[in-house]
Every structure is written in structure tokens, then in C-alpha cells.
Image 1 (tube, rainbow, N blue to C red):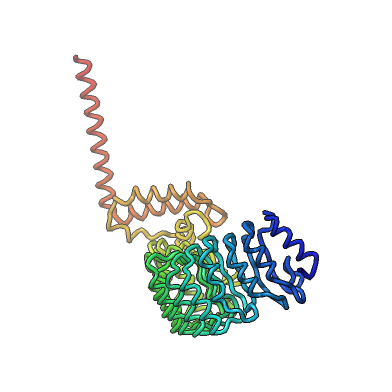
Image 2: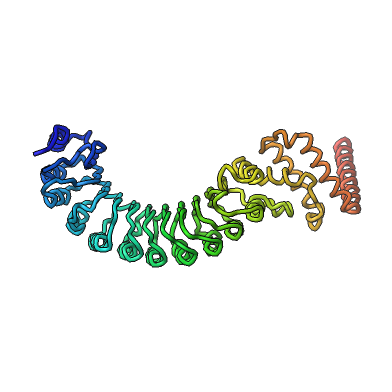
Length: 441
């Protein structure tokens, strides 16, 4: 009933419930562990898969010229152990609707992946099954290089409105366009409690209008990774993300915009939008393919370390570890390196303000002087003082700060000195009086 000894061995191990056989890859070449040959009876493979309690992963890259494809599908429908299903073929025209019992009976499936040219009719069948048989265990859904198109993806996205448990959506290279972005945004907005953490939209023909539509939907998610490479996004589209970046609900850690020619306008939009953002650590793009000049890099430099004042430096972005690539300008790479150090704000202040201006603090008079003393103490104890910041240099800055306080408020300094002198004298007189009374007693 098989075309080779290798396939016969797979059937034997399935029949005997070998726990070591936890994944089956069906191909028409030697890549998989079940190679479909001419006149292969797939019905037996489906039969034993249906009875298996050990198979966790099933990959169908090809059904070749095998026979009894319907019986093969019927056997899969009886399986309840599969937790990862990867379909890389159209199953020779068999409707995806025939897999309805599998989704209805299997409570372990957490990953579903498609990797073939999915036409509109097939997309509608997949959407029908997902909508009719809600699989609550499903966490990861992949449509990779399926070329769904706007109409095909729109029906898929609509069916996903009852899947807020999804944590990953991989949708790269499907040409979803504006219609797809609109459908996806509507779905994301409809999820009251979303678990989505990973969204891959690389190569989907998304323009500024599509990104603006999408941005309104992702505010309702716990998204941590967003991939938008190989699209048609410019500065206008990236600026529409600003509200999302600055919202308290933003959890985004990684943003990939590789191979988008967004230029200086996009760089400024990203830099402005990320002011105050506490979550993003990686902003990936190719510097030489993004159209950024020194104007755009200056905006990123201000984002990482605004040197206009000490307070501005303190409020700069100290979270991002990656901007662009290794070919980013030197100052950007240096600031990103400081973000990887403990207490990056202290490092940036000491690096960017060798002569600390104390005048803005005079409004608090001498009350702030102990705070300044404590801050310099923290500098000495909390950070590594490398070649650029020697301990003697730090001590000189501390003395300079004290001097500026004294010079800026001489009257208060003198008054404070004599007040302390009188207090010490009074304390000494009380001590002497107490000692005299004790001797007289």
C-alpha cells in the first residue's frame, strides 16, 4: 500500500503509536519523512494519522499523484493530537471546508499555517471554516506568500473577529492593500481583550492611507512586534503612528520598516512620535535604502540625547537599543551604546554637559544643594567611569557646581553660614550649661 520502504516504516510506527514519531512531513521529494510516490494510497496514511495520539505536527507540502485524497482528509478529521498544521498545497482542489470536523473536534491546535497560492474561492472556504468552527486554542496563524489579495484577505480578516486569543499573525507577501488594512483594523478594534503580540505585514502593498487605517486598530492590542518592510510607506504614514507610540497602552518593542523610502520626513515623524515612548527597543531599517540625510539623523540624535538643557537630556529616550543598522552615524551608535548601560541618563548628562549650568535650579535656592550633592554621589557609585569621565573630572564638576551656587546666591550663602554658626554656638552653650548643672547637683 506504499511506494517505498520509508513510507511503510512511517505507517508501521503510526500504527504502533511510537512516541518518537511526533511530526510528519508529506512531500514529493526527499525533504519530508513521507514521500508521495506514484499511485500512493494516501487513505492509509490518513487512517493511521486519525488514530494517532502522538503526532503533534503535520506538514502537507504535496499530495503528489497519490490516491484517495478524500480518505486522507477524512482520517485527519479524526485526529485530536495535532497542535501544528502546515498546508503548502491546494490538496488538488479538495475544498478546505472538508476539514471542518478537524477544527470542530481538535482542542489542541495552536498553530495553523498556509504557504501556497490561495485564490479567492479557497480563501472563502478557509474563512468559512474558521468562522463556523471557532478554534479557541489557536494562537498562531500564518498566511505566508499566499498572494491573497485585497478581497481574499478581507474575508479572512472578517472571520478572525472571534479570535482575540491569537498571539501571532504572519501575513507577509499577500498584497492586502487598503481594503485588507481596513478589514484587519476593524477586526482588531472589535477584540475587547486582545492577546496579539506579533503582526507581520511585510510586502503587502501598504501605503500611507493603509497604515493610517491600521494604526487606529492596533491601539487596541498588546502588540510587541510589528513588521512593515517592503511596503509603500512614507513620512505621512509614519506620522499617523505618533498617537499610538505615545499612548499608555503601547507595548511595542520592535518596529521593522526595512526597504521603505520614507526619507527625512519619515525619520522626523518617527523621532517626534517616539518622544516619551517607554517600550520600543528596536527600530530597524536600512540607512542607505531609507533616503535619510543628515536632517533625519539629527532628529534621531535629538531623540536619543537632547542637549539643549540638562532636563531635556534627562527626558530623552533611553530605551531604544537599535536605530537603523550598523552603518548608522557614529553619534547615533554611541548614544545607543549608552542606552545599554545602567543609568543611561547619568551617562548622557555627564557626556553632553561638561560644565553643568546650575542657574535654572536657583529658583529652589539652597534647598536643592543637598540633592545636587546626592546626585554626584550617585554618579560615583552607580556608573562605570571610563576614560571619557575620570573620577577627578567628576570631582571637579561637583566642586564647580557648588561654586556656582555660592556665586549665584552669595547673600543666602553668607546668611546660611552665620545661621549655622549661631546654631552651633547655641548648642555648645546649652551643653556647657547642662554640664555645670550636673556638677552643682
